[in-house]
Amino acid sequence: MIRYEVIIYWSDEDEAFIAEVPELPGCMADGRTYQEALANVEVVIQEWIDTAIGLCRPIPQPKGRLVFA
Image 1 (spheres, rainbow, N blue to C red):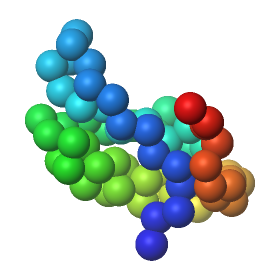
Image 2: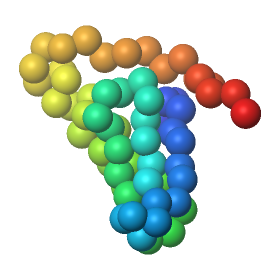
Image 3: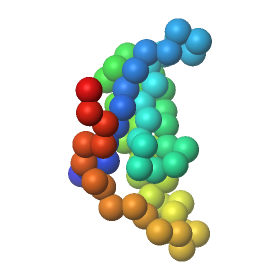
């Protein structure tokens, strides 16, 4: 189960929803719909973690909600 905060927003420039994971540098995905962006970023989170493990790099522990509105 993914426990990292995911921020999803619409990008006019990309004409897509963008999903970012602030705790994992460079971890982001896009999608034509909100749901597609979320599904795509879940795959990318796992790939990010797998790559970090393969490179013996530390994996940040999820902190939960980082941004407050």
